[in-house]
Image 1: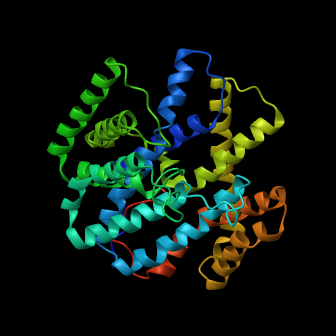
Image 2 (image 1 turned 30 degrees about the vertical axis):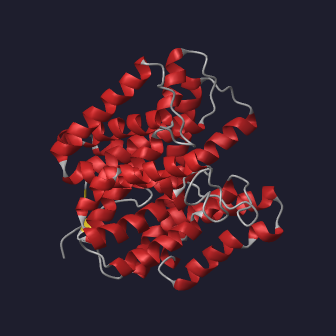
Image 3 (image 1 turned 120 degrees about the vertical axis):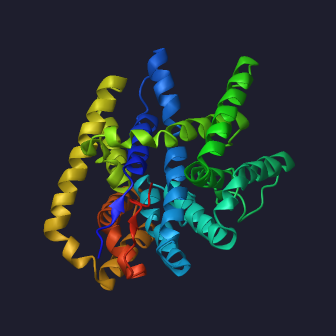
Length: 354
């Protein structure tokens, strides 16, 4: 059997996403122009994760049946609720489509579209964003529709599905992707010069959408430089789901202790702490936990640890159990891949958090 191969440029894009995510979540003092724009660019981290997730969906469909997606990604949706709990959100009372739920929904829908229409469906990448604008214009706010499918919400399917499809387009139609990347960048700068360049992420507006397309497209199409990227630099890209929990916990502790929120100090300190936490938890998991993760009972226990504590524990307590379940999931989810689909992939498309 051939050893699965990774795409180093996809790992690099996820590494960039990890850095941007840390900038966005740091809540530093933005008193200088540099720190202000660094945090601003950090808000585009989900664009990189969602774009890469579209590509990995395409690659995985070449080696896994659609049934695998219908099993694994609903599980990702549910186990990912551990991050909602880690934020202190009781998801039974306040359902939220956090980034992990957004990725699970986006990959599911992308897989269904690709299996039915093929990779040309990526040409429809503007449609989810346009549907979002239409719903916003009509002022629709229907229970069960908003939050997970449309704003207001954190990462609803519409408009964020656009970036999954955009990632596929840039991967498969390079010339067209380059043309549209330049066009999106030019359109954004034209709007900015006209005084309409303000980017709104949560209620996504046209400037954010255009700038997100151009940023991801520009970097995705530079994959010829992949051989120049040191493998060590992609450490986080290969562990993006683990880093997601680690960096958030480190930043929470940073603020709780009262360390100064000076940009350079916070970013370097939190990055070092998150990398160290990833390394330590990986070693502990390998020594103590990993051997059990191939058993169904492990995942039943973990599911219980995710879902039950918010029903009867106070916020501080279920935040702790949520971090525990989140780290256990992030460290062992590859075993869940095997349980969902015993057939090994021909291409290791990498961390599905991407």
